Every structure is written in structure tokens, then in C-alpha cells.
Image 1 (tube, protein in one colour):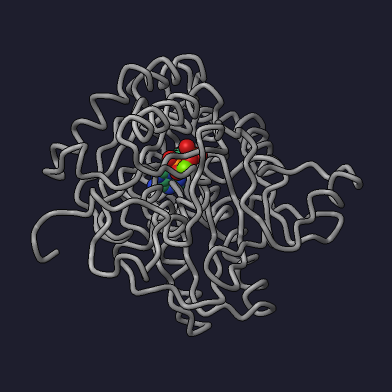
Image 2 (cartoon, protein in one colour):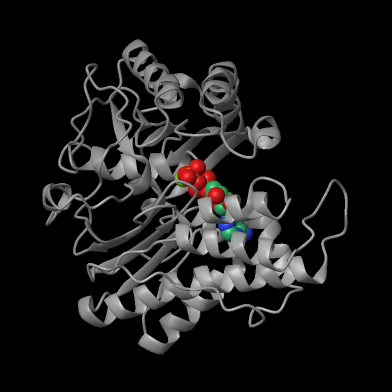
Length: 381
Ligand code: ADP
Ligand code: MG
């Protein structure tokens, strides 16, 4: 900005007619699961700082996230992490124009820490704040390092808690076209790793071992959904790995053992099956919906084999594929600030009655939830 100062003295509702010349600094806050994160983002697409405090080491002994431990840790970390984000961005609290916070979905105790903090901060500073859907945050994680999204777009969001393929006909409109009926893809990585005696989180370690394994060695099944919906399912795959380990008397990894070739082959075959399922369904749906951009985001999007497969699919269909960088693939607050910016620009903000929403939905088009409920179809958000 010309005078080097931001628009603290300006107040919302934001509209390009009111203040076209000023930049906007948003403080993003994320605490939905096991990362306490804060970021300062300028104009929705420039990261001035992004700080993430991961709780992985705390949850490692349990092989997964322990909700109680997670919320206590968020409480401890949120204030220092926000302060660190402001310091790294060289921005004072008074220069922040708005706060964006993850409202849901996630763990209730974890979400509440971020939501209460954000509300108190926005109230104290007398600036707007907005609650953001965490999954929409993942969609916006590609806003920083890619060209603008061409619509209609596809977003394959693959993380530890979610596996969804969204059709996005225009910015802010979401239709879920594929969802997981049981485990999320990242959860399957985590559970299979645990089964093989590998550490938590499973994704990175399985990817590392898979690189030295033979992906064609074991034929694991890809679930077919009996009602014909183009959904994902990973719990059968997890069971198939468990059966293979048992029936073939595979020696799992104990303590600091070097993983055997058999373990590496299982890792490679499992990973290839997950990717085949994700990319196979995306390919089929792309033929039907003809998207102009494919977004692949969420923690599992760190996986290089998935990135390569998605890139190949893009080349085949002449479809640009956007990934976030790895720092922005797993949970972070920059993506929350970017999604918050989008909503604030449209005049959408939250009021002080807003609270955490553990099962917050993103789809706002052709929502089939009622029909699925009637048919007693079980699925994940
Ligand atoms: P959530 O929002 O559900 O907490 P994140 O977006 O932070 O999840 O992603 C965490 C998940 O991503 C974990 O399940 C982890 O195993 C998975 N993951 C991280 N890196 C990789 C990788 N290289 N390959 C596959 N999965 C990965
Ligand atoms: Mg996430």
C-alpha cells in the first residue's frame, strides 16, 4: 500500500465501492484437530506469516489424536502462536483488519479454543470476524501459489478426517459428488501404519517405505459401493491389509527394527490402491462434470505418488491441477485466512453468537444429506 499503513480505521462491511485502494490483513486461526496455527495473510493470497504448532509428538504414543490432550494443548499454545505469527509478519494487533477462525468440522474442545479466542480478540479490537469451514480452508490452500481457479472446478480434499470430491461450479458453491463411506484416506494411512508397527502419522512413513517397495506385489481390493454411488471406502482395504499380515505371518516392525522388504511391499501396494481409488473416481467424475481446474489438497496431498498420479490425470484430460505446497497441505491457518477473506469480501461475517460446529457441512448445492439419512447410508463428512 502507498502510505505503508493498513486500513485499521476502516470498518466493515467491506465492499470494493467503499475502499478499493487498501489492503486487508487477516489473522487466521486454526485449532480444529491437533495443530494450533495462526497466520497473517494480506489480501487473501499473500502470506506474511504462517505458524503451526503440531501436537504430533504428544499423540504419538496413542497412535492417534486424543481429544482431551488436544484441547488442553491448544489452550496452552494459542496465545503464543498468535503472538509469534504477528511478530513474524511484523504486524501489530492493531493493524489487523479482521479475524478468520475455523468454526468446524473438528473436535469440539479443540475448535472451541480457537473460536473463543478469535471472538474475544475481534470484540476487543472492534474488528469483524468470520467462522470458516475447515474443509473450505483446504480448498483455499491453493490460493497462494497457483493461478486463479477456473470454474467449474473439482476439489479432491484428502486428509486425516475427510475424503471428499467437490464440484465447485463457481466460487463459494459446493456439491459433494464423492465422499468416504467409512475411513478417510489419511486415517487409512494412519491405521495401516499402526498395524505394521510404524509410527504416527502413518502417511509420511508409508510413503517413505513405499518408495522402496513393489506396488504390484499384493493385489488389495478397491471397494465397490453396492448402491452405485461414486463414493470412496477405505475400511475394507484396511481389513485386507490386516488379513494379509495375519495370513502371511508378516513380522511387524518392533521398536527400532529396520522394516523388512515385505513391509515395504505392503506399504507400496496399499498406497497404490488408495491412489488408484482416488484417481479412478476423480477421472470418472471429471468425464461427467468437465471441470476446468482440479484442486488436490489436505494432508494426504503431501504424498508425491498421489501428486504424480493427479498430475498425469490432468495431462490426460488437459486439466490444470493445483496443489498447495506441503506446508499448506496439512492443517494451517493461512488457508483459513484465505477462505475468510473470500467471505468477508462478500460481506459475510459472523456475530458473537457464532460457536463451534463439529459437524459443519460445506456442501450448499444439491445437498443429499436428507435422502442419505432416509436410506440409512452411513458416510463421513
Ligand atoms: P486433518 O485435517 O484431518 O487433521 P491434515 O490435513 O492435517 O488432517 O492431514 C493429516 C493426515 O495426512 C494424516 O492422516 C496423515 O497420515 C496424512 N498424511 C500426511 N502426509 C502424508 C503423506 N506423505 N502421504 C499420505 N498421507 C499423508
Ligand atoms: Mg485438515
